[in-house]
Length: 440
Ligand SMILES: [Fe+2]
Image (cartoon, rainbow, N blue to C red; front, side):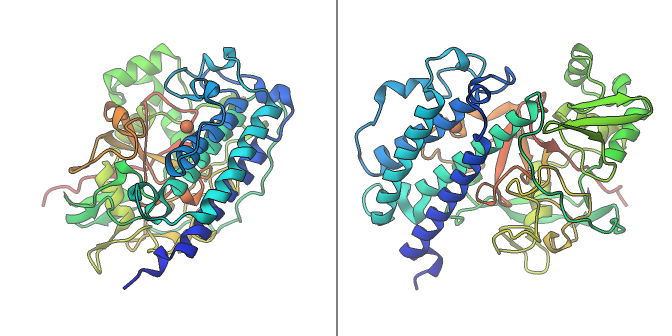
């Protein structure tokens, strides 16, 4: 029996839609004056014009050269846009394509890719790359990941707002339980069937997880403010030795972009200064801050396996679903994704997106730090290039799960794994906490 989801016309349509959505978002994020595009708004980030041409260059390399066997369009620029050859801090000093040329190059690549896609068979030699449209899905995800990166650049940029989006729909205050018990036992972690999943999400394997409690919603700004008010940043008891050295060495006192004005906390968000909303999930905290908060609260961060079990395992069927709400692709009622809003929605939003056990906002809103290092699953095999994940495996990176408001649905699912250094906080990172039940 043929899976209708793998029908070539369905795949072609899905790939085209994913690439088009990504390019519309890229266009919006780069629709600023040329000096804004070429400026480096933070040494942590590339100039936006680098992201733009890099998006085109990766697309050319994978979809025109690797899939379609075409010659390089501009071989002399490959090195400039190789993320491993030049650090972000170094990129502004490179002879980058000027804005008009970068736009033209990315558009020319896309025009040719559309031709390739129209004739793609999704099978044949090199089948693994094109199977179920994988390479097209990988490139759409790559562009969306850079769209998230470019949104971070916009957040770091100084000056008046240039991006606008409606706020999330108001939601009644959440009155459900603060935590949920996830029963112990094995569950299926990772995937072997999700067609556009990336190598680090594979393969599906059984994982034993002991019973644990997990927060029903991400930790809010109000809860985090209680940690600050209680002297959390000044008390070494809550911090790992590395975390304490970092928080002291960098004089951290609150999430990034927060500052104190008289009796209240304000924050800078995409060019606007506002009172920190108490009911929103906290965002722009590093792993050390999340870990310290959890210890202060008498809790801990969930492991990656715990997070995924809470997000995907349906105890009624013992099956892992694609998302907390089931197998359906994300819709606006499920989760805050895709830069539809430029902020997280209040904690407890999206009841239609909750897991079978009632855990909310696992997908969207804020990336959630987990306790776990970024490591390969048993049976991992690198594909299609080792710089995608393999070179990042190790204890220096912590795993984040669930995606943020800045992530598009194509680059977010119950199995999707993100990772970063424990000091990073310009990313849209928050967390929820867990605890082990007391022995009876
Ligand atoms: Fe990239």
